[in-house]
Amino acid sequence: MSETNDKAGAAKPNLSAEVLEFVKVNAPRVALVHARVIDGAGAPAREDQTILVRGGKIEFVGDSGAAPPRTDALALDLRGRTVIPGIIGMHDHLFYTASLNRDAQGRVPAPGPLVTEIAYSAPRLYLACGVTTIRTTGAIEPYADLNVKKQIDGGRMPGPKIDVTGPFLTGAGPFPQMHQLTGPEDARRMVRYWADLGVTSFKAYMGITRAELGAAIEEAHARGLKVTGHLGSVGYREAAALGIDNLEHGPIYTDTEFLPEKQPDVCPPLPRLIEFWAKTEISSAPVQEMMHDLVERGVAITSTLPVFELGVPGRPVLQQRVLDAMCPESRTSYLTARARGVFMGMAQSFPWELLFRKEMEFEYAFAKAGGLLLAGPDPTGMGGVLPGFGDWRAVELLVEAGFTPIEAIRIATQNAARYLERLNGIGSIAPGKDADLVVVRGDPSKNIEEIENVEIVFKDGIGYDPEKLIDSVRGQVGIR
Ligand SMILES: [Zn+2]
Image (cartoon, rainbow, N blue to C red; front, side, top):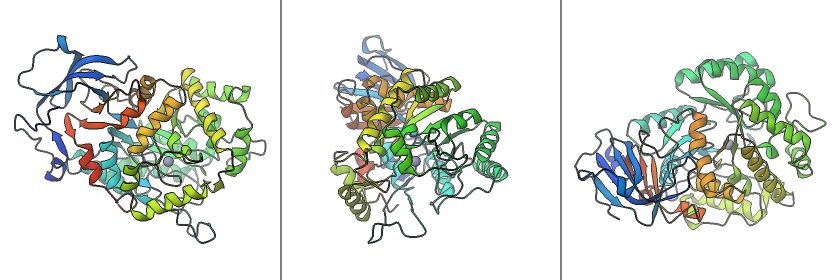
């Protein structure tokens, strides 16, 4: 494969020297020839395709024999490679559980659990792994997230396109980095303030009340912005009735509505929820009613299987490049937690594996019933799920859940663009769309793990070098 740079000598003037260090293909016209194409829209993989890129947009995609000749284009022969659309990560924070920071007794000391903004390493890892658009799905340092987006859009740092989600909308809880809402008017004020500063979505969290959630949704919708939630105090159907657009994680770890002791606006203890779902069948009538209610109301669900895989003993398989990306303390924190077998504060003797299977079963059934399923890694939990690498794992786990590789890739691309109402620009490989394209060695339609063999990541027609981006964050995840 040719890696000749910039045939026409026309570097995009708006990319800084720092960004250009990571660029390996940069020409006004690029022809990707003899590639296998998975279009993200659900069509079967097509062999020997040509994609023509011009001015950052896809100009043509079709059989190589039918492609218009482009003698002025930089041609890359992609035999043996597959091109998929840029991944759109829908639970892709710019922060990370850098350290569990427990004391000698295994307790989390005051002020409570902390996460670390990784505004330097996360955008590089997302882009390196072919994630060309993210939704941050909750901000810990919202000013930093907004400024990172500005720097990336301005060509001053490498990274994906970003839908910046506002700071978490929640009530009482153990997280000292979150504001605690004092009522519906406070929720409205928060939505207005952050929307004015450029936030483009909101996320409700475990301690929000129905009144606060309803107020936040109303205020966000009035501005054409969407609201998602990782709920606890409010049940799935209550939130759906209030007009929520999206629910994070799926019901097994977050839908409390079926607990007999559930008090309105109060989040029951997690062990109780886990106990309930361990003995509840996805095929049971109440769960099916809830699922169909969400489908009918058009509420999307975000699959975050990678963060829950952490609970399953012996999983995920450790990858050296993932460990290498972490700073020493983060690596030790993760490996220690993994060895101790404690997940979300509970021992691995909990039926985590059963719950993980049930979540997969629910997500598959939800999508097959017509629900809009999205995906993202959620780089939190006990650590070990990293930006980018975790997005690959999210797609692989959807295949383990029963989806075909083509379906799983569509969930991570076109479904997300549909939710974001950006189908005109991103989400599939079609003429007129942004040239956000991932070149991978091998054939992920046959073996989904080959999605990890990323060779070039195009964002708006500029081809970035994944190895250089990954090298640049070695030992940094957890620090910056
Ligand atoms: Zn999250």
